[in-house]
Image (cartoon, rainbow over all chains, first blue to last red; front, side, top):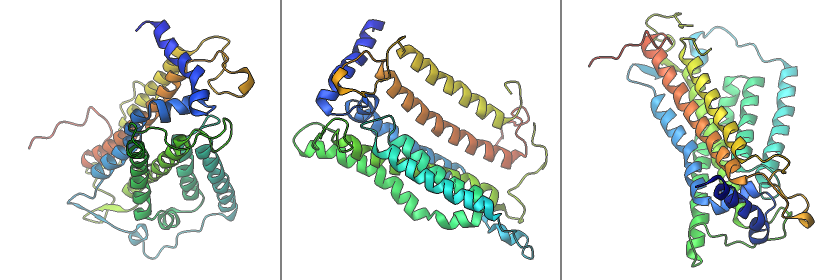
Length: 236
Length: 96
């Protein structure tokens, strides 16, 4: 394809997207409508990453899970500073609002499920920075996160199949298109963004949980930190 | 950092190189003077806009980058657990 043809493809979408799909963000409508099938697989990529990280970091035969406080039973963990805690709560609230805004406005302005999902996940990480591991551990119920991940992936498929059920093609835009510039515009773009956002947020929190568990929870059989035969040679 | 013999630094280097492809993609679709592919004024639509396709591709690229970084870091943790070092030269293939 020559450069002119590639550019013409993009220009075509800029010309027709507002009229055809009533969205004002052309990038979103390409991602979630015109190239919706690609995005289905793109959405499964964080899913695959979580699966891969979970398999790679599972407790091996010579490891066991232990609570962080089991290593020094007599020692009290100093509570985090109240100032840091307050800042964390404020920042966390702001992040949740920004995530919701980003998630729901993809059809009118830059943003979308992937970006909003990552912002939502960082709200949990801010809680970790502001408090401690055990508090965050209570805040991330594994079943709910895995459920969110699966529901996001299945929700995308369901929207796609709704197009087939209505007698059209997979991922056909079956919902009312609304007014361009309004939140409820673009038909399925908003629903797909919500599905992707839930899936991405769940995936990111799960991946980081797996990495945190490695330093906090998983121990070698002898009770030490997971085995390091020649410890302290970090190889920098 | 490029000459460092630390697997974590290697993951960061891969991540930086991967981010460079995002900028390359955006550059491919850039046209001087054109606006972002977001319609702010419906009355003046369609106005000249930079290529939205490559911007959508850049989003895909970012997602792939995050997935690859997560997997590489998980592998790095396992390498450190099994061998006690992050130096790729010190890690020899195991015989079974």
